[in-house]
Length: 99
Image 1 (spheres, rainbow, N blue to C red):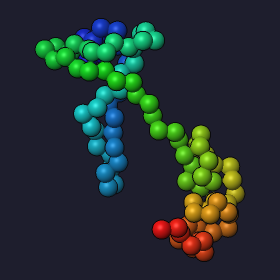
Image 2: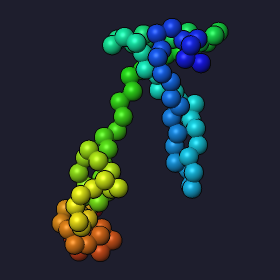
Image 3: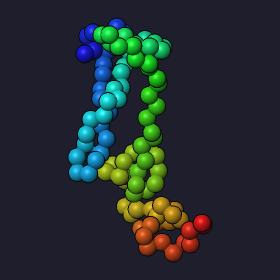
């Protein structure tokens, strides 16, 4: 597929988590050989709109910080999502949620 698309150096299909496994979506992330990608791309008889891909920042669900996942977290204990203190999970938090 990549060989047929002018200016594309790499293509990767987005997968999403569904239940126990991941399924492929119809969305493809393309890497271009120039810093400014085209606004449209011709793939066979189709003309496709091209939009920039901005991934969500990686968030650790153990310490609640950005830039790494819980598997690579160096904190010995987790941090509560609701109050930001360590020593208990969100389900055990005594902070009353604001409605």
